[in-house]
Length: 348
Image 1 (tube, rainbow, N blue to C red):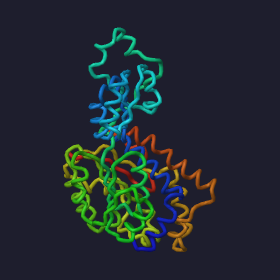
Image 2: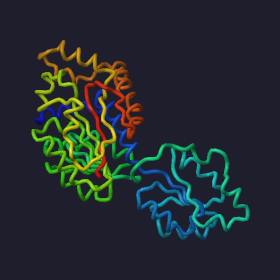
Image 3: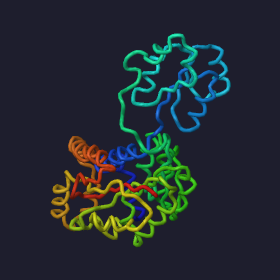
């Protein structure tokens, strides 16, 4: 994209329904394949060594012990970790309310009523949730991050984020808007290797259509990922929707599911998801593009609709995330046609 397109994206990507809803879909899929910083409650944490190790591994830790001496030592040794003196394991409930792990390491043998200790107040731990595939605080490399909106959202969700883009203009916008996120100007996806060396996710959201050699770019990205690493990809779908919008924003192509899948054919990956998305609004958007023809369609696509309409469109699009998350590893395509396509791949 040109500098003016990056400027336009920077102006609207935190408000426009398409950017906001797509981000919600991406975050839902990301959470399915790589958990952000999960909560750990270390009950009977003693002087804090295990709790500190959990924190270094990226968990959100609460260490709890009935001993004032133990907690004193723990706080002095590991001031960055939260420790509380308490003998009631039911008090962990707020910390693990959205899911997490209660850890009792060599604790029960010290309690005369060990069965009661293991059965605290109802609701201390939330109901079981579906397991996720990668460690908490997972690394995310956002390749072709543009002006940084998605990278910033991933960071807010608890991921360790590297945003990368070949455009100096885009990286300039991203760094100015989100100074707490790491951004690098680079056009070689192989450079993500150190960031994802212990596992993580490479994200290419609406990037491949901007590249003449899309297959080569994806192959280089796959090569940089360790075994078990995940790739989350999105591209524009339905070639019949080609319009001035694609031309203005430097697209080389739109994809069908078959042409999208060809990009990783024979690559060392396992396909976990391939589906259309932004499907509910597909007929409306296709009709809009046809009606607008070549008369300012690109600008019209980036104009933020009036508040209530913007919110409704966001909710309709973002609502597709549930079906997409449920389809991972099931070999089903919840949406056959849509404005865009999404895939999740695992490096083998």
